[in-house]
Image 1 (cartoon, rainbow, N blue to C red):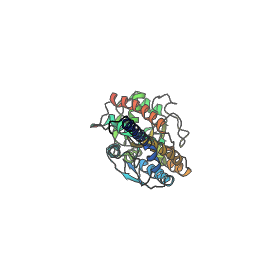
Image 2 (cartoon, one colour):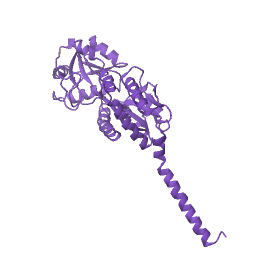
Image 3 (cartoon, helix red, strand yellow):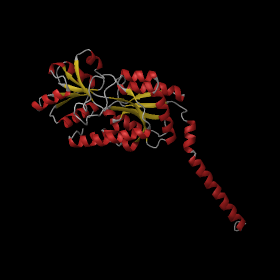
Image 4 (cartoon, helix red, strand yellow):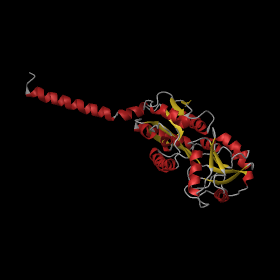
Length: 332
């Protein structure tokens, strides 16, 4: 009989057992996802053209990861809008660990404040870990006649608005570091944006602009004496040019920004997959051939885990959001 106490007790037990089973299955979902992942190729979205630093890093790390994970890594170049196209593509992908983005952290630290309408990568993306770090190099044209960064600052102060510096485009890290240098040194210098680092470098070599912050693309010209390296950004000297002082050493403090590169996943990607990726990325970045490939790009191989990488992003976001607001660097 449906109204009997025995039936009521049995029904309660059945419902209790079902609820416990559902809870167990829900709790094991992440473990099941981790156990079956990856079961198909993984896509690396890169917001820059083939052959650039970000693209090469993605391919080098992708090759190493593909071997350790047992699945190929396919690089999908989606250039444009300073990486924002890749951000949008990654953010709308399924959060299952099969679509990731390799990018400089400026897509999170600067782009949301630089561009209108703004994307929200801090909400839509999840940092997985860093791949490497590249300092920027303050390089002046030879005919300028300065031998140190302090001499450059003195010249700029003596002739406000007369000197010029180049960048790879409005909103690039080269531009932002250039503005940070102007801010911290207290100088007035004209910004000349280019379509990429290469043409900016060529105009420094040709004497058309006075200086720029090189993203490790002009090493050969520096070594061969066609451009003069004055100083480097960062908290320590460059392993590639150990004789060049940091700007901090020269008393121009606060210009420590470089280029961090990392891997990002869509928000909602299971923590177990993110953790597994972090471990595998650290192994890949530690491989001698990966380190050498990065060094050829002027980049140190440094694998920060997700938590540390998130703190790096937060620190630089605070710095750059304030700089962009103060100097009105918004790009429409």
